[in-house]
Image (cartoon, rainbow, N blue to C red; front, top):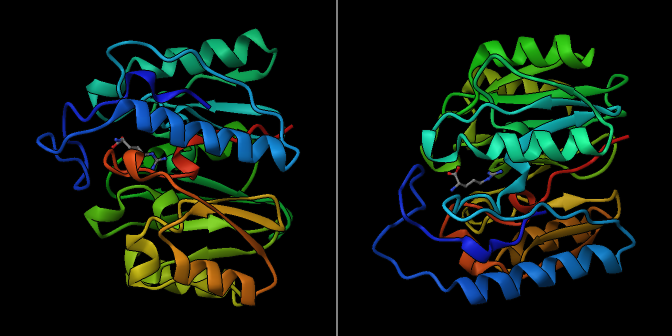
Length: 261
Ligand code: ARG
């Protein structure tokens, strides 16, 4: 995770960002800190990246890489405003001794890649259409040695996979079908017949931008409807308020890069 000390909305690279709307960085830090504490209370270890001035989106740490089985596939950001973030993530992984594979294709890490370890022996789900480019899906498959399922995103409001789909345990996902092309919806229905299906209100509340440890599902507190659905499906929703960071077009998942040994 990376503190939003320098968080701001200075440019607009997704439809949620409004450069004229005021942002309260202090409140952003407070809310982010609650998220960090929540993860620690749930028993997770949190490593911190040092935020850098001039990189206001660095708080969205999920975009810096994608890690499976101890192998790190690095990010290459689409927009130049965020390009320099990749080096900070790379330095973190290299200093910690992770095996780092540098990308040559545009991809935004866990923003567009999700991992479902128990689905067909370990599947990578990958979004394209707005940020991550299709050749990066093939590159990720070669880097990680896991099948990569390409899913086409079609709604600019849901510009990253992780705002439209999330793994809720080692074998299942929750997703909003309307974010995907008709063919990709068919692929998801075939692979995950028991998926939890989210609706318009869930996705607009950034509910799908969640992290789950298989039981506890940490999600944006505005997503009350999705929390109910997850509860009914046997999960334990843990709501966290992240209204300031929503102004940049992100929530819980965007703030967390998962380290998978
Ligand atoms: N403002 C950031 C961008 O548009 C938000 C990134 C959100 N991160 C995510 N994993 N979806 O790039």
